[in-house]
Image (cartoon, rainbow over all chains, first blue to last red; front, side, top):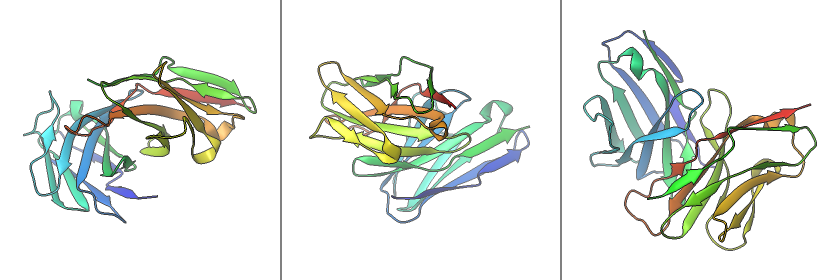
Length: 113
Length: 116
């Protein structure tokens, strides 16, 4: 099946700093990528939909200035958490879509101290 | 609006016994239905999907699911559970008649615990 990678898998940063998470589709081109956030023992919450070459579409309640998404190519989307705070600590998962199916990255565990 | 309900937070089953993880959905049009499995600190792995055709769908690792339109359900099943099946399972739906966003909506997840 299609493979989606995320980097880093785990990051710890200090409050007030910014963190960039990369999501790559390794063996296919994805016109649409999604970013999700997952709290412990909870389901995935869609944060935004990212289309290559255009601005991301953010879900209601997600601050676009805080969670910057860039989809510069058909194989790479990035999520930058700006001025991170402890409440931003979470598990972030990206996903890339091919036709009917979505393939998910392994996730990035962000801890803000 | 589309939604998915997984009524059980946790399902416990003994190894070797059949398992069922329940899922019901709501869409305005026709559904695309999916099951994913998540292991601790990992992303989601695709198990199976229903798009059209045969109501009984077979997927990875011996799992299958049955699409029931009248009951708007898509329960996940396996004839004989393994301890290694213990994980978090998510049902998801996309409305094939809704082109806006084409996004998946996930259920709350069901933790499957298989005991030896």
